[in-house]
Image 1 (spheres, rainbow, N blue to C red):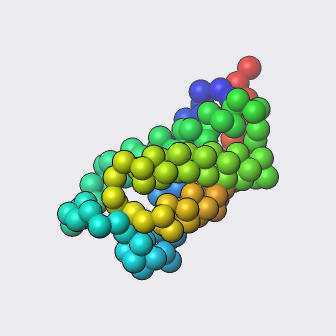
Image 2 (image 1 turned 30 degrees about the horizontal axis):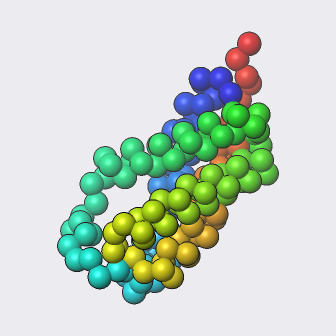
Length: 139
């Protein structure tokens, strides 16, 4: 994947991942996450640091773009698959590592979160795949 397509996919993907993440985690499953927190207290911020959330979503989109480039994948279906796999594996690793060293979530939340990331990352990857698939590769 050339630089122009990588940057476009990262920017569009970051926006989509932010929006879909808000819908999934802050709206649809907010009560689930609250009910399945660990016993650690004072870990949630009163309000999000938007710049940090934006950077995190851009990094997530860049990782999906990188994986798509490594597989020479583009298009809706390929993007969906790559995004779903990247999202699951990334958050499976993070969630279980955090579960092992911190008390911010219980085991139920630790198992469910990477499964929800299949949807989150899959949608982000599908949109990235569409964007980079419609762009002409650099010569």
